[in-house]
Image (cartoon, rainbow, N blue to C red; front, side):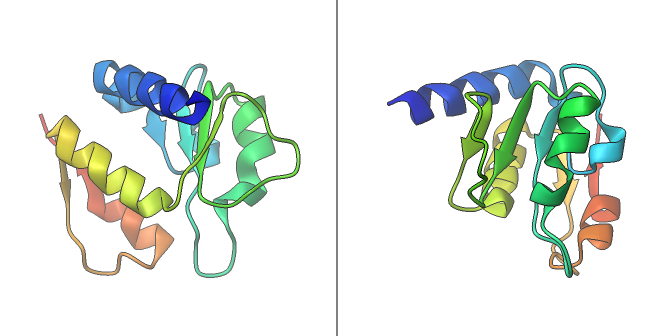
Length: 113
């Protein structure tokens, strides 16, 4: 039940603040949400500390971490979470080509007004 409450809290927060979801820890600012994705050679979990230090409010990941925090949501698939959120938000366009390449994913996941 706690997981569902956190998921709902994060989704509600992002629906009101869609610009706050980030997949690059270097782009995190105060109260942003870091979505930890698996890249070609690294998992985004390697950058969770950097995201916290930069001011992340929540972390979403699909890989267990040792120091679990109440502000970390463990999901089955971070990619699926992102796609489901994009459908709800309806302000994003995503081209599926090169989805497995994190750099392409960042460039191809664009906000529309």
